[in-house]
Length: 212
Length: 317
Ligand SMILES: NC(=O)c1ccc[n+]([C@@H]2O[C@H](COP(=O)([O-])OP(=O)(O)OC[C@H]3O[C@@H](n4cnc5c(N)ncnc54)[C@H](OP(=O)(O)O)[C@@H]3O)[C@@H](O)[C@H]2O)c1
Image (cartoon, rainbow over all chains, first blue to last red; front, side):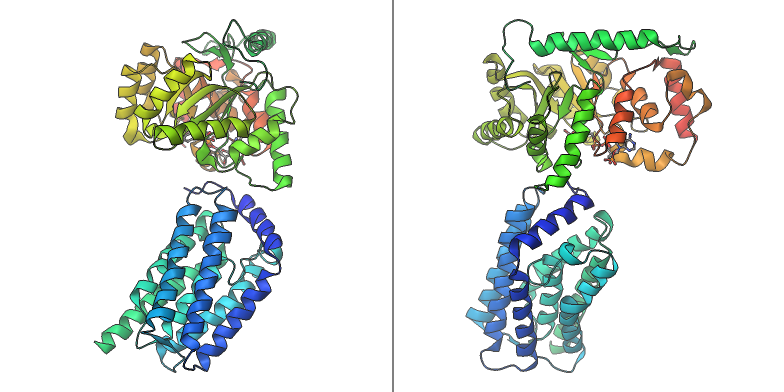
């Protein structure tokens, strides 16, 4: 039950993008930093990546869901809660517990993970442009949920010895919700989201089976 | 009810104006050529609320999705035109809810810019749990609409209805609301709704009824008639699905006998011609659709035989 029309959704996106400008640039800079750190890992890089992802999820929970979308969508406060929870989980796993390292390796999860990260930063906006949702209506990486979730799934595929399953739950839930948006709100480019979700969950399970 | 002029003593300015509008509708109906035998000439498309006798137009409007436009000024101005058309064509009931995002805020925005809203019959809902949250929510609704009192406060989808009913009874006694209602749109809640209708002092009941979803004919509509309850019909177009289903088909040739020139009036006339229905509340975001919907208030209504024919036709498509 979506309480708003596509017209209203995209109008609000325009308002949101204008209101947070130029936060989009900062988000992209952070995204590129994560990409570089993932390819050239160091002793501290996993903690930095975890902290950056946590900040982006927190932003999405508070600014996007709570402040901008809650007024038109009664489900948005619940989404905000889940996004904030994911931010805390990312901090806990990568900054406090530090029991997983993030680093690219030339195996199936590694290549898929890196591809998903690049898709989130570059492929998804291109698709959105083709679907006529470019410019001010764009869901920009880091400040809008869908590309942020695709990117996070990519990063989690680079986690060694394996991706913490608890960090997969919220991104996968959002993959389902985003998948529904393809039809319910008419956002064809969001089809990337359920595809990323299915790929990520299968690769992580395959990876865990291999290590068992 | 309006920000300025409602008191609980004697007839209100709105009630008087409502009566005048009723006379207008009668005149229009009288000017139309006499209908064929299967269509009864519409006596008036104003309907009386059984518990108070106040008359309201048989077509109101809903605000789910259509008025939830957020802060966009451009979209608010577009909805202002829709609401202006509603009042220009004699509109009465506006139905909303705190569940509908910014709809109440947008209704308030529009009402504060419309001059001829004297026929407004304000209807919103309480949709939360607990007495304190319910009271707070209803106060917020009044602020958003820019009203001191509501003509109708409904308990949305029966949520925590026992708690809210206590509050609403006391608010009604104190003149803060004029009528009490309860709503659902789910078939599975019909038994609960019937219990409330049979045992509680509500003035209005709201549920779904349209030419394809006619379950309400079995128990809800007869019970409402028996108990003297006003009936509001939601989803008269099944959220717009009926247009996707029927739009590619022509109207039957005999649709002209009941003054229908488009599917909207065909579908709405079916709904409001049920004798137990007080009004239908189609929602729209478009001025041309609002015109079509409000035009249903004019011309003859189908009688029982014609209603069966209408059902037969759509089921054959
Ligand atoms: N439990 C409850 O209390 C409850 C539940 C459901 C609904 N309701 C109330 O009932 C109202 C009506 O129900 P609803 O909004 O769900 O559905 P509805 O009124 O059956 O259908 C609304 C849809 O019909 C389209 N439409 C309206 N007039 C049209 C016309 N003349 N020609 C073509 N299309 C037209 C609208 O699109 P356009 O915008 O393009 O015109 C909109 O998509 C709600 O808005 C709400 O206020 C209450």
